Structure formats: C-alpha cells, structure tokens
Length: 357
Ligand code: KG4
Ligand code: ZN
Image (cartoon, rainbow, N blue to C red):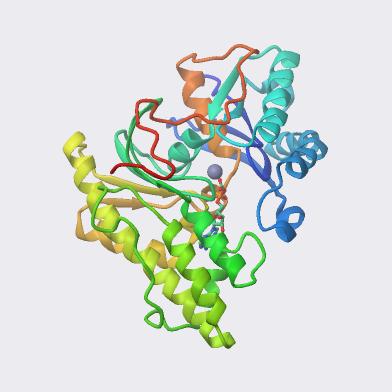
C-alpha cells in the first residue's frame, strides 16, 4: 500500500481562521481528517462588516492553536505531513499575511513543500471533498466577497462566464439585513424572517435582468430596500421586505443560471453536466431548492457542498493543495499575498460605474 499524501491546509483570508488535514483513500478520493474553523462573528457584529485590523489580530491570536488542534484531531503526527497549503489571496492583505506566513514557516520548519492557494480555487474545488467530480463543471460561487459563474475546466484553468458588476450576493444580503436592524452577517437571518413574510408585498428591482448575459448586479436592489425601510411601520412589513428581497434574488439567480447553462454548453460538452453551488450563500435553503429544480429540468447533476464546506474553511484549501501536490506544483517561500487574484486572469475587470455590458 503506497503512502497517501497528507496535506495541511490553512485559511485566513477574511474572518475565519481555519486549518485542516486531508488525505486520500485507496480509491484516490479525498478524506477529511480534521476541519477546524474559528469564526470571528462576535468581533465584527457591531460594525456591520469585517474590520481588517481586528480580523488580523484575531488570526494572529488563534492560528497556532487552530493548526495544533487540526493536527491533534487528525490523529496524525507532524512528521507525516507531506505539504503545507495556505491561502495567498484574494482577501484582506493583513489577514492573508497571517496564514500565509504561518504556512511558509511551518513548511520550512518541517522541511516540506509549500503551496500557495487561491481562495476562490478552494471554493471551486470544494465539491471534490464530497463527491467524485470530473472536469469540466459549472460553478456558481456566491459568498460575502464574490458572485461568479465559472467554467471550471481543470486545476488552474477557469473561464469566467459572469460576475457581479457591483456588490457580491452575500454582501447584498448583509446590507439588507443591516437596514432591517439585523447584526452582521445577516444573510441567514433574512432567510428566517422571509419565511414569515409576503414575498409579493414589495416590488424590488432586478438590475441587468434582461441584459449582460449571466453577469449579476445587486446594488440597485439595496438602494430600493433603503427607501422602503424608511417607510416601514411594523414587524410584519419587515418580514414582507425580507421575503420580497429573498424572492427577487431567487428570480435573478434562476434567470441568470439558465443563461450560464447555455454559455457553459457552448464552451464544454462533458459526459455528465454538473452544476456546483459554493460559498456562504449556498446555505440558503430556498436558493438551493430553486437551483436544484432548475438542474433537474436541464439535465444537470446539482452539487452543494455541506454547510461546513460551503463557507470559508481550510479543507477546501487543502483540497487544492492535494491536487497541486500530486502535480508537484510547489511555490517558493517568497510567494506574495495577493489581495486581488482572479481565477480567470483574462476576464475583463467589470466593476464600478460606467461598466459596459
Ligand atoms: O463564503 P462565506 O462564508 O465567506 C466569504 O464571504 O468568503 O460567505 C459568507 C456570506 C455572508 O455574506 C452571509 O450573510 C452569507 O454568506 N450567508 C447567507 C446564508 N448563510 C450565509 N446568505 C443568505 N442565506 C443564508 N442562509
Ligand atoms: Zn470564501
């Protein structure tokens, strides 16, 4: 029996400090041995968003014992680790630097290869931790920082089909929640409040619904929510606004996903069509059920990583590390932290006013 690679993954790009050890079974499928995630929700909740300096300080305080816990829970010894993979971007530079420096020092201390991982590639490969998934597949990444449709052609090979031209979807949920007086991160709360409201009470805009391919836009929605919140008179109207917001997002994603299916099929013709939805917003049950239905109708296998692998975690970073380790794609210890690091380097920058779609 050959020794299977043992990879330590480290994540600190935003407000989660995380470490994980993964390996492979005899069939070559990944096995998660430990997956430790420490969230900083309590630290940032009063500020309505992540405060970079506070986040970085918290990463520094926690990173060593999180990694220690991941190793202990894995049941393996430090000497057995074959490579260390750390997120190098995109993200907040002060946060990235913590996990990146720690990973490099750790790899150097145990004299093993170091692998710099793109956080978005982690999300993209996260379904591989739960299921056999062949390239190419279609990915919808919806998190607090990103909203993109990507053709995942291979490790390191991505074609962006659509992206948000302003806010990320998680950000839109969080901003709407803030306007309704809900603490950060408000996405999960909006989903709960929406269950008690009338989704047809308020008519909210659906920016670039009928143009821009499968690009997305949510900023206009937030402006409209702001106007309505000023007129809200009671709790029930708050629920109605949450429900109307949730419904509008479902309609946007349904329409844009149909376009993404078409674009994906123009570029790739896999034996099995697979649609992966990853990132924190993929935890939203109604969004899940709408997209699952759409997949059934269009002959796609839908894949949603489980909740602990949907949000930020280090198992997905170790997953990229595992694939790169097998291809001997290692990095030098001077690899920089990259606050901006798109998966598709050739895709046009589509943010800000004046964007032409
Ligand atoms: O992927 P993630 O954990 O972190 C990054 O942003 O990378 O995503 C966090 C985002 C937050 O904006 C949070 O409000 C949103 O995911 N979120 C949700 C739900 N659960 C988390 N949004 C809507 N419905 C949910 N159930
Ligand atoms: Zn993320």
